[in-house]
Image (cartoon, rainbow, N blue to C red; front, side, top):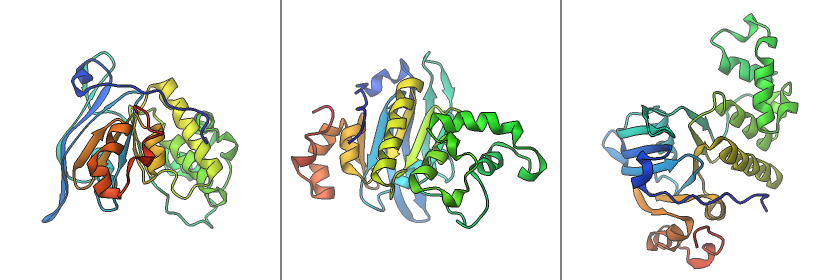
Length: 263
């Protein structure tokens, strides 16, 4: 279905000091007396896609919000660049599952970029100031033709590509995707994952993808983390899909592991 299969990169947690890597160490989140998740540890290497899967309410989207720093959490986030220098916190890009807005609004894609890329009100300066930058960003996601399109006139796949372009400005060390193609049609889904493949190969970008699509996780991820209020299993797609925790969580047997990389 897709035009490219991502290359497998096998890195152990011990190599993190020698390659570009984002380390999520002992993350935990509580809302009052309720524990959402605890002791989440992940090492995500540059050029690697990590798929986080699990049941609804297992803490997947909350984990992304914690990584973004939007909610209080325990644990630490560290970034190590390609030279092995500890640079502290990575530049993070984020694509939400959907964008809430009034579909009747006259706001265009250009207006959205202007609002996000400048601290000044959109109506106080000319779009010519940022237009070349915006068009370069949209070209990266094959959406430059949408620059003057109203947001409400975009398809689901087009809107997600626009949001991806926003998340890539500035170019992040770590890209977080929260169910980015939920409800997107087959063609839009294929385009999105093809763009993601190109980004990883050309920009050596680390990606964390929250997904309910187990077949896509099995096919495209370098590593999979099965999460339900904590990490139940992690490893290559083949390893996780064969793990007894997978059967216990989803009631799935071996049928999905045939296309998983690392099998």
